[in-house]
Amino acid sequence: MNTLLVTSTEAGTGKTAVTLALARLAAERGADVGYMKPKGTRLQSNVGKTLDADPMLARELLGLDAEMHDLEPVVYSPTFVEGAIRGRENPDELRERVREAFEGLAEDKDLMVVEGADDLATGGIVDLTDPEVADLLDARSLVVSRYEEPGDVDDVLAAADDLGDRCTGVVFNVVADDAYDDVETDVAPFLDGRGVPVRGVLPRVPELAGVTVGDLAAELGANVLTDGAGEDALVERFLVGAMSGEAALSHFRRTKAAAVITGGDRADVQAAALDAPGVACLVLTGGHRPSGAVLGKATEQGVPVLAVQSDTLTTVERAEGLVRSGRVRDERTVDRMQELLHDHADVDALLD
Image (tube, rainbow, N blue to C red; front, top):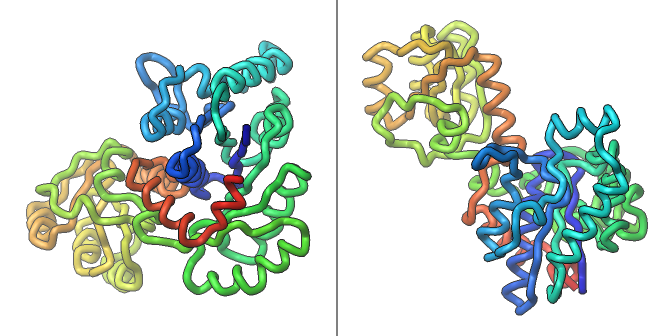
């Protein structure tokens, strides 16, 4: 049996999409594929239990009938971490729990894909870092990383060093057009020379680079004040409207696919945002309702207006965390990632 652990250098690399896309590509080739995420880190409430959203999506997309407590044997919640620090968790027992769950899931499987944490260090307090999990499960390891600047190569080399001989290479994801050639002509040969093969360079595509306005509204718990038009528009960045209306207009006109977050009582900033073609939606904070004129203009232009009770700083942090962490996942995302891996990665090397 072949086991591949997919880890990452930081949150927001697209690790989950890569993991599930590789699993589905293997299944399309006739392999019987299993999945596991030893440490549940992306937590949400489900039927009174704290569960990781990634194994839940994997179970749905891969058609698995495994129990959640096997797919994620360790729920790495803040409560768990606090208990481990205070000596209430036994690392040896946890490792055995992971091993036993893995053996059950791997029975009769040709390939097991194991999803790591958002970085290699998570799990260190109970001896379950991703390198330690790779050793425990005898897994090859793939590093998923963004590439935004040359300094990102440091993180890849550090990850490869931690994984040692188990590292099968790196896949760079969300690579912008102006950096793509540099990665292929300079970065890839450099890393190959350091014993870290570049297995794929995946371009940045708009539908995977942001979230829809509808997803943003759901995550923020926002009240949508307009008629629903424009909720499929993509948001890739957030602008804070804290300046004068005139200054805001100049700033907003230089951007695209943006959500403007501003106080619900800032009619001047709201009007400026609606005059900028690159603004996908307005997020109004503080529980204030905008004027009828603003709502009328937004409705006419098809720009959704979202209202939240939280303050501007809290709203910005939650919104940026949503985009950065890639928390919005669905089958369309995995389908698109399959296409990207097929076209821009050495899938044979990753799955063999």
